[in-house]
Image 1 (cartoon, helix red, strand yellow):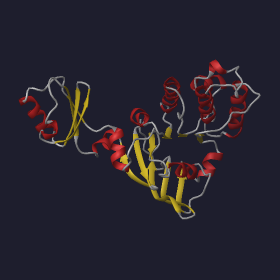
Image 2 (tube, helix red, strand yellow):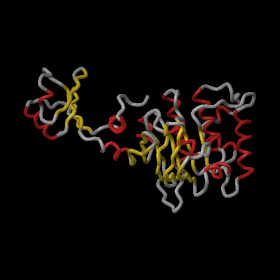
Image 3 (cartoon, one colour):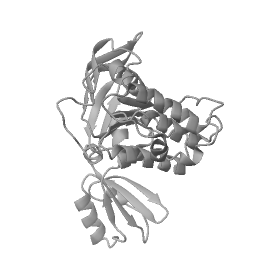
Image 4 (tube, one colour):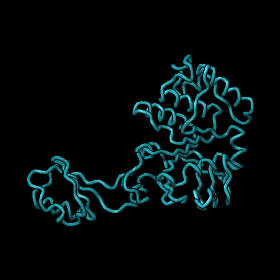
Length: 307
């Protein structure tokens, strides 16, 4: 769901940040409207972490401006309107999950003015940690600990939720459980901004994808819009006979043979398919456009996708 308002959830205007001679963020202009789920992608060193740190008020820009929910980042964070889930961080030891979340919830409730902080049981249900209520917070698995960190991030019912590589190191099931919690929270019209090294997460969970490189936005749009920026298509079919001369077919610029399955990368899929049909080679034919991984590689000039 997308809700446009006069005041965006996030607004970078010419934001710049240098570390010595290295420019991490270079005049970044970015607007995120409220009620959207946005993935922030980029290769290592692209400036993602620095941009998120400026967004949360942890470091100031050297030039330009960053605004959250119509105010300064530090003020938005202090008011509890922003929740954040960092990549790393230990949970407090010696307390149960219920005790930890109860403390965090009370701290937010004490300063909440214009929004209702959820009851503790509702918070634990939202984050899918009710089954962990009596467990020691410092004795959880990686996936369980991430769900508790998510519960901490949403304990104040923030309007903006920022997730920095939230599923790094988690197994597939833990990743699915965490994203189910994020989706449930986003359904209430909240704004979600997340960075990730798993491109399929951006494809599956983001309304909009922003790709940055060298501190600047190089692509911005829906997953399908990003994919369409990469020319060419892939024609796949089952091979029944020799694979000779496939690269010589019209439009074909490259080919792969994976067992009996052939993938032809082509700039003219219609001409390629017609040539295959004339040669009697059309078996279980499939024509697809570029995936998000291929688009990311093409846009950033990387040799291999983020993993």
